Length: 435
Image (cartoon, rainbow, N blue to C red):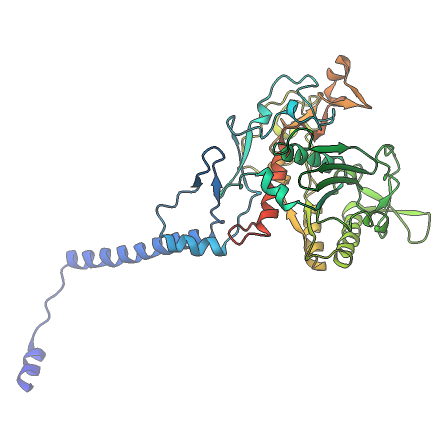
């Protein structure tokens, strides 16, 4: 052993050539890069929203809409259990095969306000756009499945005329699975009712544009210039909501008439003018606390629909002023640039904060950004005003008469209901969760 140590000690080290050093360095670098790539791939996978399965309605086969071949099945399963699907981020895809989800002329319950084709609109492309979230797909809307969930139950929409717009849309979607003569429909004030006999299911709309009490609570006589709200009083409305199994709220457009809101002083007929965000927070806090203390959340599911945008200023999409949304036939295609349609997004943040602060169980259905792209979907000049269709002279003046608030049906509100449907089925399914 001693001899060997001496030999090793006396042995001279042969210098490593530059080429050898380079090859070794490249090999080490390649291993590190490969590990980094693998790690990045795993991080992206983990951060991906849930990969949703969609059933083909014709052949009842199930297909995965995201490419998954590059990922091991066990990693996909792990990611799917942990991650959520953000349905509000995506793009509109033209689809004249599966859209529209129903035909205007076949849904006899639609009001004249939203039947754009019947009212003279000639282009129909606005009916053929499907919302495609970025990393997942909306579950196929199955009317029978939703009717089963509504069997013996009541769903109640509460809010303004845009919420009524969505209520009409849902009625038409459900009607595709209902036999003729097996459903009734009655418009009332403040309550309108759709009833499906076979399922003993009721879908209603209740007029309450500010959610709390106001001097605009008469749905047939609410054109009041001096709108005043009572931010702490909601029980007058709330008593009509308690029996519902599903509650769908909205409150936005009536807040946009002015920067300040007239708010009654407590116990006084006098009012103060308060900035919109402050008044909105007071009202939503009243609403959330009412839900928290008056609803059995083991039985009743509550949802809040975010702001529906207005496309009144055509300069917002780089078009000459004066036309508003009239004549628009395509969505805004540029989804990479943030939109500015005048939507007061502060109210969305207030809604999120109030729900979080009060701890009330409410599903937030975010329709805002996807609707901002749809300048083509409004009733525009193909609607009624004071109970009558617009005259040719009025149609020629869209800056004054175009309705760029409400939506043609079939159309954009159908997608809102697809999102609502996703929320409803996610609450009862461990295989599908949304953000």
